[in-house]
Amino acid sequence: MQRCEIESKAAFDHIRYAQLWEDADVLTEALGDCAGGTLVSICSAGDNALAMLTLDPEKVVVVDLSPAQIACLQLRIGMFRNLDHAEFLALMGARPSTKRKALLAKALAGAAPEVQAFWNALGDEVAQHGAGGVGKFERYFRIFRTRLLPLVHSRKTIDAIFVPRPKAARQAFLDRRFNTWRWRLLLNVFFSRFVMGRMGRDKAFFDHVEGSPAQHVARRIHHAAVIGEPAQNPYLHWIMKGTHGAALPMTWRAEHFEVIKSRLDRLDIRPGSLEAFISTGEKADGFNLSDIFEYMSPGVFAQVYGSILRASAPGARLVYWNMMAPRRVPQAFADRVTTRSDIEDRLKPRDKAFFYSDLVVEEVKG
Image 1 (cartoon, rainbow, N blue to C red):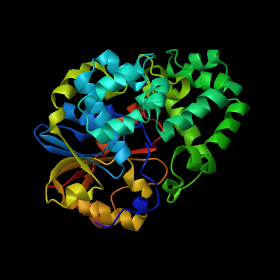
Image 2 (tube, one colour):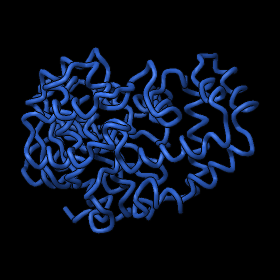
Image 3 (cartoon, rainbow, N blue to C red):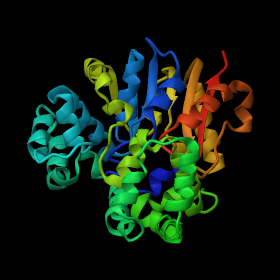
């Protein structure tokens, strides 16, 4: 498999995402029945790989180019092993806490020395913002939330976003109270390609993006605020308020805590690209590919996609997201997969991680 373009263009020595901005509820339902199978997941912050354990696979192979992102998963493993659920939420930042440094030390007990050193260096930031708030992307949203959003909307208006209301009332709230000229100006500036490329995502991630990021964000906010129910959206809550409300991401919810904890030994962490799995000759029954194809040129995307098919068992599902660069099965492989439009159409309206414009579910033919 050709060395991924993004590997030579972007830095991987820092945490880019300290929590997952993809909806694990959608991912796990899209993967279907995987009991006893082998699953492969891009690591990112580790939340989705952990959520995949609820599907009762034999193992989940986790790959990532970034040692920092793998360190996020390794911390979570320690949290599941050494903390209770309330402590987990406090350390992640989903709930306020003054005890995060002590919880961090507790979670790191038994971790490899390099993992302990990595997280201890971030101890002050973790204490202030939680382990789920220390990534580049989360800092970007924190600047937005704390410095700029108050210039546009009052705390009362922000709180009102999360008051449950019917869809028509959500549309009216957006139109009459929220979508002001100041809000539109903020979107156009803060979510521009220039600002996002320097403060949010690595600028190399925009090499194959089409259109205006600000206009894309505006469309996706409409999805989150009107099509979805904001009161049930943990991602929107974090962006606007810096913690989670009553709604939590799947991996962080109490009902999954003990199941994930009991299956941690099924994780198989392999630092590196997808080649760390594909080169072994193993076959996977499902892939969580995050949005990695968005960072590839069409030619490299086709090459990587073909290598994934060679490592796929019959009936395996490939699940991935597009934000702004449209990617679906390359034409050369169209006869080898079935696009599961039925699953996509059912799950897209429920996808709470609203930044992505497309959810793709493709199934390898037998």
